Length: 157
Image (cartoon, rainbow, N blue to C red; front, side, top):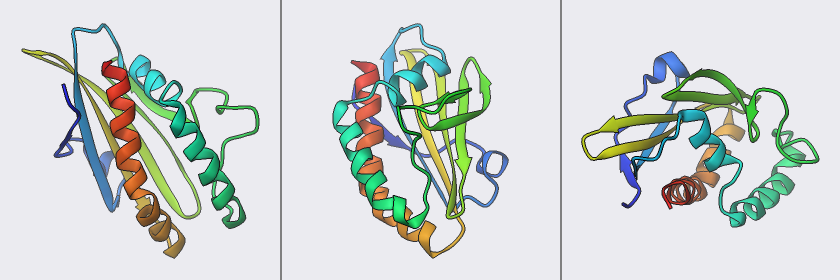
């Protein structure tokens, strides 16, 4: 089943009030027994290797601007998935994200049961604070679309 860009169904005002950007992508996973945390870990921490290379380039470019980068040695520690601290969780939904000086972001992974099986829905919300945040968002948007699609495709494989 291919990844579909869908109309976001998350409540942006509840998750990130004032978000200027919200998108959502969905893929069918048949009857895999995944909860939201398992799906998020598989997508974010075990995604395609080319994403790691893309993130290394991103970190080199943004460091001089004071944007957050992962701690040396890998993923963030504590209740985090990759670089994203978990801010809310149920078996069918996990919300992760952080606030930074240039933008705030949330990543939401939902598991939805349907007649034809289960779906994983990945939603992203961003609220920018200044010109740096708006520039960053515009710059990463083409990569964001590729990365989310690749992560979902890998999850369904």
